[in-house]
Length: 242
Image (cartoon, rainbow, N blue to C red; front, side):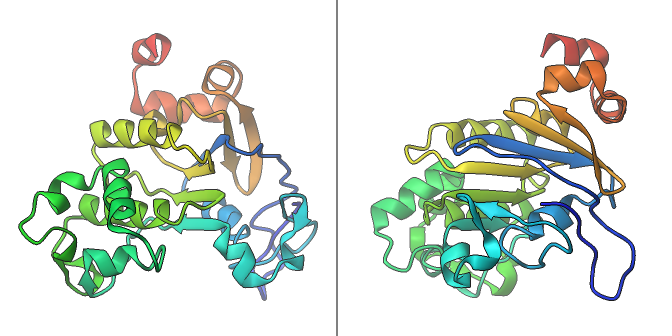
C-alpha cells in the first residue's frame, strides 16, 4: 500500500506505508494514540480503501476480490468485543454456521474461554445478553477470539484485542495461536510491549508513518520511539532479560 486519507480530508492519516507479511507470520503494530494503527488494519478487509497505492492479499489487489470472498479470508477482532443476544453456541456459529460441538469446544480451549463456559451448568447453551453484558470485558474478548478461531481464517487481525486480558491469559492465548495446525497469519495491534515482543515483525507507527520495523531485539537497539514506549512500561532490566 502507499497512503490513505479519510473522505473529505486533505491530510494523509497514513503516509507512504509499505511492508510485506509472509504467510503464517505474526506482525505487530504499535504506536501512540492517533498514530494510524487502526486506520492501517481497516484497509485489509476494505472498511476503507487506500487513497494511493494498493493492498495485496495473496498477491491480489483487495479491490479485485469479491467482498464476500475477501472477508471470508479474514477474521477481525475489534478492541470492543461484540457479542449477540442468544447463547454461546449461536454466537460461535456466527464464525462458522455449521460448526460441530467439538470445533466449538476446541475454539473455546484455544481462546482460554473453556473455564467459564464449559464448566457452567448450561455449557454452550449458556445465555448471552445483548452485547454480552453478562460477561466481563476479558470474557467477552475471549469469546470473540473463539468465534474468530472457529472460522479458521487465513488472516486473523487483533485490534488491541489483548488489552482486556490479564498478562497470564494474554501469554497463554498467544502461545496457543502458535500451535494452530492451519497456521494463519496474525496481525496484532497492541499497546502492551509484552504482547508483541515475540512477533516476527513489529511495525512502529508515528503520525501515520513507519518509523521502525524489525524484531523486538532490533527495535530496542535502534528505534527511539519503540524504546520510549518499551521503557515507559517495563524496566530496562526486564527488557534485557526478556
